[in-house]
Length: 193
Ligand SMILES: [Zn+2]
Image (cartoon, rainbow, N blue to C red):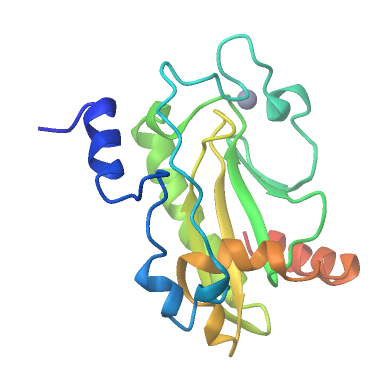
């Protein structure tokens, strides 16, 4: 039986100090962790906020994608688009697969679900074929916006320190790709879709 939000919060706090700070994780000692453990202090854990605030594209909050459906689109078919980031990423490639309709993951019917699976595999192959790519990661978060956005991000070949789920954090630390490089890679991936 899953814990209620209050039970989960109490459970989490049981591992925290008097200020509500959880200990620095063991992962802070791993090679892939971007920061030095001695320099870190975990923020006090905030209390749960319920009901949660609306995301963009939920209730009366506008959806940026639906307001400007062609913005940053680099490939599309009748149902799906591949969307670039306005500013080039720090990692060697990053783009989002999104349905044209305002749907979240749980809203997809069987046909859309099956097509998304095929497109994700095609996207993974297309990005992997770019020169200098070590691995492609596919992520679905969605805490900011209700319009499904499946994010594909690529790790530079050889940079083993950037392996795993911290790649999204490294993306914020690394300098942005030159725009001409990002544009050329987007064109190659779009052509392979
Ligand atoms: Zn939308």
